[in-house]
Image 1 (cartoon, rainbow, N blue to C red):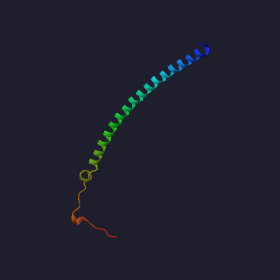
Image 2 (image 1 turned 135 degrees about the horizontal axis):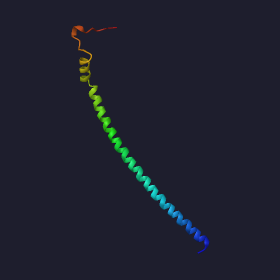
Image 3 (image 1 turned 90 degrees about the horizontal axis):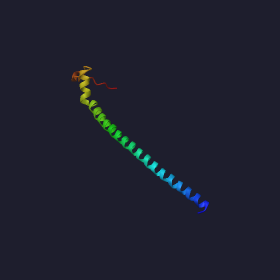
Image 4 (image 1 turned 90 degrees about the vertical axis):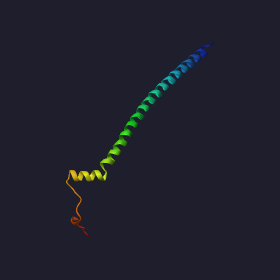
Length: 90
């Protein structure tokens, strides 16, 4: 073998080794990112569940029955009698 072919073979062996290391590193990064993605999906599911619960709670707190109950208990409000209603016309 000539000196040039030995050099070429050495360069090709180094290129193959570097390529193999790059593939292994790429697979490692891919797995690491996949694990992070799974964690973020799980966190998203927890947050989404909490959001749904809060929406239901908001609906319960904002219901007309609840508002009327709070108005009666805390503010001492009541429905006016028919003789207490005054209609204002422009």
